[in-house]
Amino acid sequence: MGERTRSELYGELAAVGPYGVHPGHALITMVEPHPGHEYAYNRWYEDDHYYAGAMAMPWMFAGRRWVATRDLQLLRGPERSAVAQPVTAGRYLSTYWVTDGRYDDHMRWTVAVNKRLNRDARVYRDRTHVFTAFQDHEATVYRDGAAGPRDFHALDHPYAGLVLEVVDADGPEERAALLEWLCTRHLPRRLAGSPSAMVTLFRPTPLPGDRMTYVQQVEGVDTRLTLLWFLEKGPRECWDEHFAGLDGAVAEGGLGRVELVAPFVPTVPGTDRYVDRLR
View 1 (cartoon, rainbow, N blue to C red):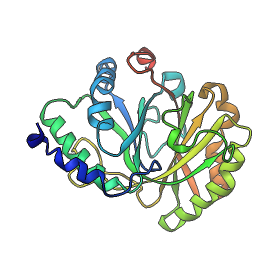
View 2: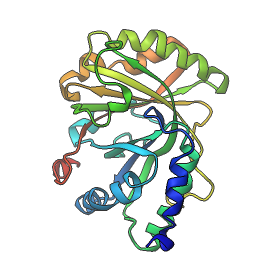
View 3: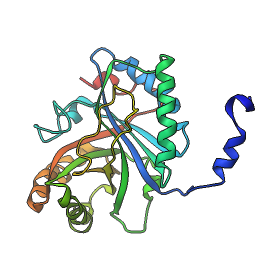
View 4: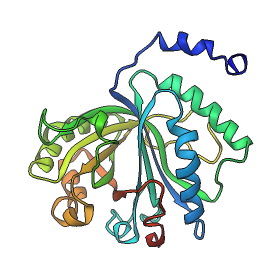
């Protein structure tokens, strides 16, 4: 077994390089199962791909799946989204943290593993990637300062919901100013007294040229920011008060525009809960 898996190399690799707990990178992937394939897709992803195609890989240390039932899909905006066409597309969202400084190491592994899974017929075809990108962590803004879970806990803490927000700066030069405005002015105001414990901010990175062909190359690499709002209440309970006006608030800042605001609730591993409420 050692000769076939080169297990002697694992000890050498573990002895070098970063190995902290900071989520320096993320995989954020929003996927649409094709009509009639919702149950099969859910079982494939949860029973096989979540583990073999993600969590079993080196340096991917936390993950969580989320789902948007039909009533949550209808809360999304803007209607003419540059991310999802139609805006209701992408009923499942998976989020993963990758150890800071280990992006290249992880990518070499994930490309190789997914090629192997594809060759072995362990990739589910009847799905569409709506918004899939590896992303670099830019900042985390906390509602309660130093109190409460940190961003590296976020995918393990039992949050009741998640809001995915995608914001595009007006151009590459404006993204840094947009990020600063979000972190120092916009988000602290929105988080105060809200059910959101934290917002993590990421910027997408290009997918490798040898990625699987069913995953499109990432758009907005130079202009886009991805925000994840972690909620202590279900999104239905707080949507009108805390999220309905997000796009207008960003537009008023004059540095960018919201291209997607989409609420989700966590899936329940090992079950098909919510699958019958997707359409």
